[in-house]
Length: 164
Image (cartoon, rainbow, N blue to C red; front, side, top):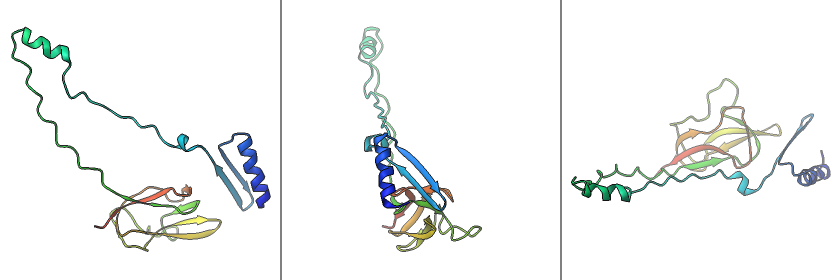
């Protein structure tokens, strides 16, 4: 598939308002995904709790001869702020591999310490094996993918707790 054919394909997909398309022709695979930024963001749900009792309930208590309502015990201490984790993202589209070859141990696993430049995984793209290296020193908190999974450009691969 040459550049002209690819351009015509993209224009056709835009014209027909197709958001996802995949084509496989021999050794060539083309996958196109498009959409608006608003469509890719998930909804946010915000829960709000009422800090004061309902007005009618507290006003009725003194009239019945009962002592006024005692304040609720103080709430548990606020949870610590969320931890700042560094996310390692894929620089290319391809297939994720956690180890250098089938049957060998993974490059890294959660709990491992890593240094800048240490290989974390391989992303295969167009039959080329691309080593993805750590861009920050720290501890691997979570691997976000399964071995052999197809990945997108800028998709998060690992969460690393940076060294302080």
